[in-house]
Length: 162
Image (cartoon, rainbow, N blue to C red):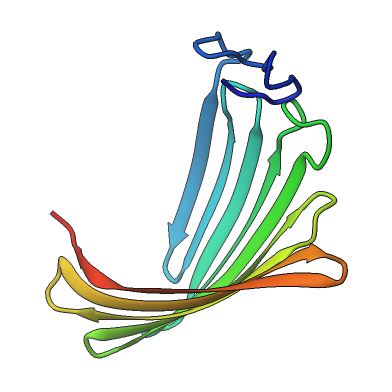
């Protein structure tokens, strides 16, 4: 069940209930030389709308710059704070078989303190389909105007594409 604008006793969409809309998802991409762009829009079956725009630019053969913006509207299932906006800026720098990654982004839910996240990473290619990776990230969220929460994330692993 999805409580949405209902209550725990009477959810907006009960278990097994028919959703209110036909979902759709559409996207378009464009790539020409060092530039790539993407535009997407979608709606799920309970009328949450989402649209995104993203782009990348190969500044040099080893440096790629990226950015994206996403907006989400949950007005159909939320009384308050239905809008969420987010953006991310990133770059990767290739050096031999390794790649350095950096990113920064913010998520701003309507009426709620924003979340900020900074990430660093490194990937080392073992072959065309396998690489080792290490990622570190710091995420700060505003709990209230006077208090914040901070979480550190770390990841180490092997990625293999079959």
